Length: 469
Image 1 (cartoon, one colour):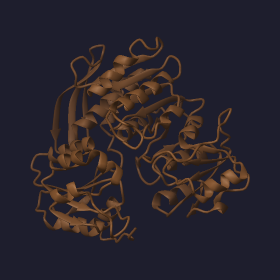
Image 2 (cartoon, one colour):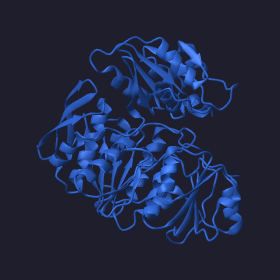
Image 3 (tube, one colour):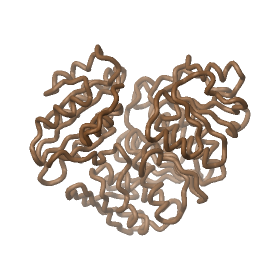
Image 4 (cartoon, one colour):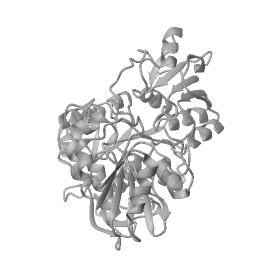
């Protein structure tokens, strides 16, 4: 999801945006692509552009979206009613400039998402960690239960471009991005907050600012709403305290490992790549969670999803049973293949808390040897804010291989990570090869980071080369 400092001012509108002929700048983004697909499936004329093509963009084109490679003013179609952007787009982007020149409304993705959910029972999923997995669980399991939900999830559920779907059911599940505070443009009927932690330092000064932002979102929810909160963290507990009694029509539901949580997780066990736990509900009913995705953090995500299903009036036991078939969102500690007897996993972790959780998941199966992490840094601002935290979290790996972002051969990798790395190799494919060279049967390699490392790693595993960025 986007993490850039806001640089583009949206057009001030008196009503919901007209999306009948909408153009997306950066349509291949994790939040943009699924939304573009949903709008196309709603019967709207959708176009978009991005800097390069991909399997997901090819699939998006087959769904009826006109996709342009590269950014230029001529990509904005005649008769366009809105140009959608995120703050990852530069203010000087030629398509943004063309929209201003022609008087076409500039609409932030969050506003377009809010409009796309109109007429449905909307379920928003927010949180510093876990929102993509939790939203994916809700989308997949509601579909398996015959609810035919629409959804926008910032990750691939089945294959390329599979994070977005428009359907006939009453529910619309949406991952809502709080990274730049534009979640305040989205008003939902029900919501899940999976976690409250300090992140996105370019937009939030400290943890208190995050709590303020989540509180503002909750107070802006639709009337008679329900908010499910994983209240294990002190910041989430503070959020619950603030909201208790703040709105008489807002129902609060707490989830977590805490003894006082309304939905309590306990008796956690890990067996290979599977995780199990007992989930006890507020009316005393107990459910056996059995997931095929590893990690105690995924059990917490699953508990939030069950609590939300219950809030929707669905059969919690049936939801739990179908959760056992959820095999994860791509890039969330998902298998990326094997080289001999060495298993390779793909991790999107880009925050110290997420790194610790995924390393714990990698180390949990019995018989695992060394855990070798190939880590791709996200950027200078993030590492300036969390530098020590990254080094401490990555120290949980047996071996650290540090690689580059692909932004230039002369890039300076974070010194605190260079010091701890066994291997430093700016070329991503070579870094994966170096990691595999120091493994033995039974070891695990984790490709970790938000950039293109996973693509290069997959190329190494399959023997298919990936063009250098």
